[in-house]
Amino acid sequence: MRARGHRPGGRLGKTFERWKRELLGTGPYWDFSGYGKLDRDESFFLDVPHFTPVVGHVILREILGRDCRLCEARARIIHDAADWVDRSSIDAYLARQAMMRTISRRPHEGCARVVEGVLRARPAASP
Image 1: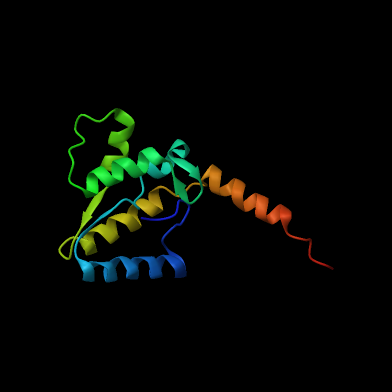
Image 2: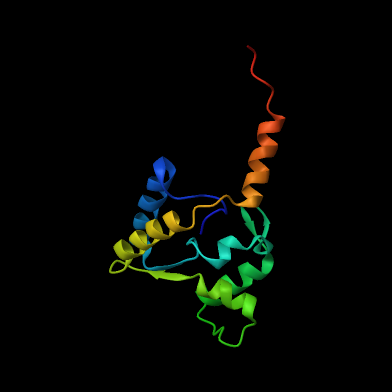
């Protein structure tokens, strides 16, 4: 899972992708760090890096193999964000993520607010 606002790509993104490949050493896994309705809806987040409890509960249901077909619509958004990643799917998954990253590039309002706050709090550089 990723902290919201982390955009794989560039130096950190390559590290994140390498980590996803290394994680397969422990076995296949559910990955909720993709691009889609989940990471686009700020109501699913308490702040930039933290999901709300409902997101965690739905993710836990998925990990434990509990059915979510009867879950309400917002829970389905979370459920549908999951990708099963194993050795046979990792290359296609990472390629799909790269494509979605390109398509979905737009500023995240919450992230933008955090960055703006940090920049405002920094002392001005001396001439």
